[in-house]
Length: 42
Figure 1 (cartoon, rainbow, N blue to C red):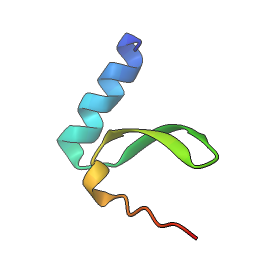
Figure 2: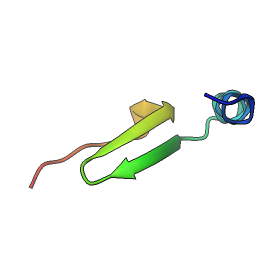
Figure 3: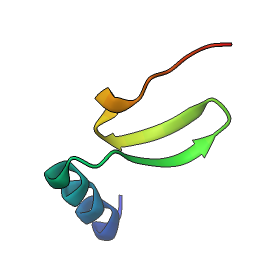
Figure 4: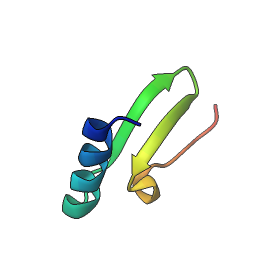
């Protein structure tokens, strides 16, 4: 990860923000507050 991305992740953790990136179809990278994501299947 780049320094800018790592800084963004630290800020997201500090402020309780859910940070998600690289969403493709049914997958995504969750960088902070994964506990706030609810996955469901159809």
